[in-house]
Image 1 (tube, protein in one colour):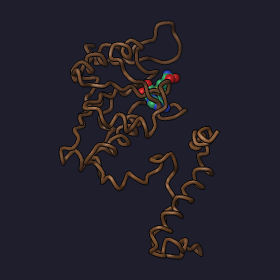
Image 2 (cartoon, helix red, strand yellow):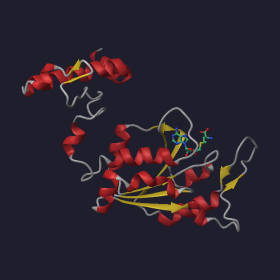
Image 3 (spheres, helix red, strand yellow):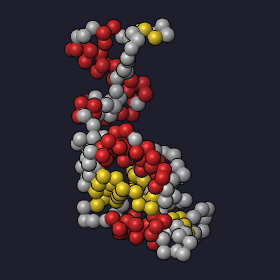
Image 4 (cartoon, helix red, strand yellow):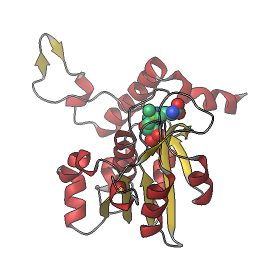
Length: 227
Ligand code: SAM
């Protein structure tokens, strides 16, 4: 998979030079390029913002540099993503869906965002990572790219994905490591038993309890199925 990230701040993607994502790039499983939108500005001062029609607080990203930056990498196989608080909710299901694309282009917004016509012209999918507003699109892009890459074959061992939170519509069960007793709290006995069937049953139950406690909204579909 190839990912082109269009941003005014390419240097903010330092986390992608570490760990799993860095290894996947070195192994050639994925290719990630950073394109500086400012390099495409025709303005003599490389300006990349402009006032919104109709007035209001703040500036918008200028149309021309964003348009030309997208055009520089766009092919008929590209899917363009614009992370925005005004988008549809991004989740694990969407991550899996995007992981099957061949080429993703991310536009990192700044200021008040981008001109609506860019979204139309590139048929960009608008996605939000949650109901809050961040100062720029770099962090949301990192969140989306990091999470979708986990589903790209070869990036992670498949076993690592099978019991993760959201895989079966539930949160992951509680996990423990050494020591067996820590600050007076003991690891549940069943996990020390070596009985895999019992461990499986305990984890299934604990997973449901955690979901009820922390994310009852995930179980709403199940209730409806029973009705
Ligand atoms: N005026 C925009 C609004 O009210 O919807 C907010 C603009 S925000 C200050 C600047 C940029 O940060 C956005 O264009 C977007 O790229 C990014 N951004 C901020 N919050 C986000 C979120 N929750 N999800 C995805 N992207 C976000």
